[in-house]
Image 1 (tube, rainbow, N blue to C red):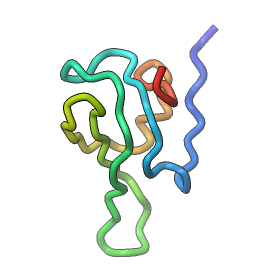
Image 2 (cartoon, rainbow, N blue to C red; image 1 turned 60 degrees about the vertical axis):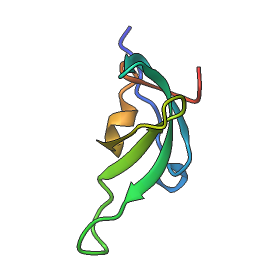
Image 3 (cartoon, one colour; image 1 turned 60 degrees about the horizontal axis):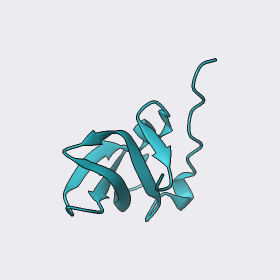
Amino acid sequence: MPARGNRVDRKKLLLSKWTAVAPVGKNKHFLVSALVLPDPPGGLLEWIDIEAVHSGATRRIRWRSLRDSSCWRQGWV
C-alpha cells in the first residue's frame, strides 16, 4: 500500500511541528519558524524556514515538501 501524503493547511503552517523520517544534519525534530513571503506581495507562498529543535539550525525548504510522508511526519514522533 503506498504511503499517504501529509495534510498540510497553509493557514496553520507557522509554528507547526515536524519530524524528519531520516535525520537532517543529525536533527529529527523541526518547527516551522517563518513563512517566506513572496516578492511581489500577493504571490503564492512557496518557501518556509524550518528550525531544528535540538541545534537551532535553520533551513529553507518548499512548504509543499512537507506533504511527502516518506520524508516528513506531522508532529514530533
